[in-house]
Length: 612
Image 1 (cartoon, one colour):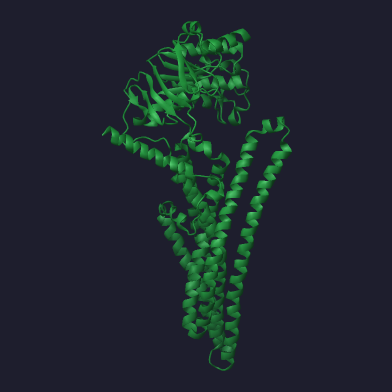
Image 2 (tube, one colour):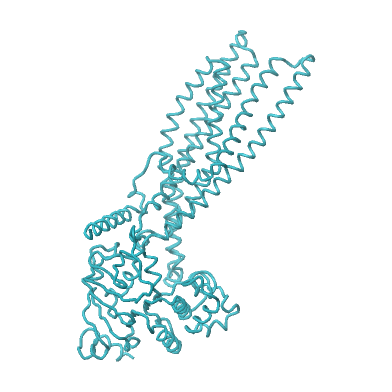
């Protein structure tokens, strides 16, 4: 049973890795669809609002019916003539036409409201759905996908779909109704002339399909190149200090200009193809109308057709031609939206590498916080041939303080990533409270962990809300107590808005040490049984570090704590020090014992202490 479960987990992980590998921002690496299948995935979102869809269809039918009624009135007026005897008849018909126009106006307004409502609602629901899915994806996904590309899909592509469902589909349905109604009324008026018009339609449809495929490909290419320029802009602006410090403003500006020029060139080709398609359709459609008008004039002169009937037929032919011309333009919009839907569907179909098992186990009510690594091998998805951890076995007892040290790239942060289950090892197991973390719901596991990263992550909100982020239900008094413990109050008292001061994007209004203290306060407030400190005091000055270190020592009491430290003086009092080198545990023990052994730890310590 255990083997079967493990096989199932491995299969699921392999599938997720395959999904991750399939997701590529390079246009040439992505298989293109040549149909509108991606749009069908949006139908459940549309059908959630059936009542609005039905009302929109009723309004569409009413508007189309009103338009199709106008040529009937025109024929009667022409055939009855404009003599004095026909004055009352003319008055009645124009009165009825005014009623028809009123129905047309009301139906058109209703159609606009309901269709626009559906488009706005669909985009709001879709953005929520895609964003929620993105939050479930593992860090491995964001190692290979550019954030700017993902944001382009979330914004530009969903906006394209809003255009589709908010106007394009409405225009398409209206023109389909008009085309069908006009063709039926043309047949009723004159079968001979209807055959000529249908021949023109038979020529237009293949043209529409063939050019539509070309437009779809170019539309997808345009969206990809636009997303690429957005990704470049996001990456550059996020590192603007580095760009300016290295005098690379012109180079990055040129790179962005090249990206936007590429996007423009693809968009130009797409627009040219659509323009050619529109010209062909209009020429064929209205050319057939001119031909029918000429032939009809011959029949009128010969007495085989009344002038009113010819006028009625020509109006219906114009309606049909206009509907076909509009449909040719709409088809390009539909193809563009299908490309956007395909890109969004790719995001939604990307499975997270890390997910909860079907029947997750539960942690005990009172979590001990014990941790164990059992012969763990791990490689990052972006570097599958390079072992970040190689056969690591490690046990951390309840309440124990264990420091993890070693040179850069030794695998220290990787240990934290596996404990929080941002990744799963390729071999071996990670155990918390005696349970393999793969058998736990990641949310339950992470609920037992508080962490302070080396680079504090802050959000564009107040200091108070940034501290509360780790425990949203915490009272203001608890937040203030955590802030005081982390010595946040020492600098907050000097700020104009105090704890309500906005920190700016990524905390840019604060110094590195201030950001770090806020992150420490967040961990204190979280009050979890497992504490992970990744160079938690690295950004602090000597005086602040002394105060915060005292707060951390109080926080670490009765908690299982793992500390990553490059400055070995900060971990001398740890219960145990584990030394990593090239992904392997090469030594462990107390500071004094490791110094006596004279291994890697002793060499690192002597270098640091002699430098000090």
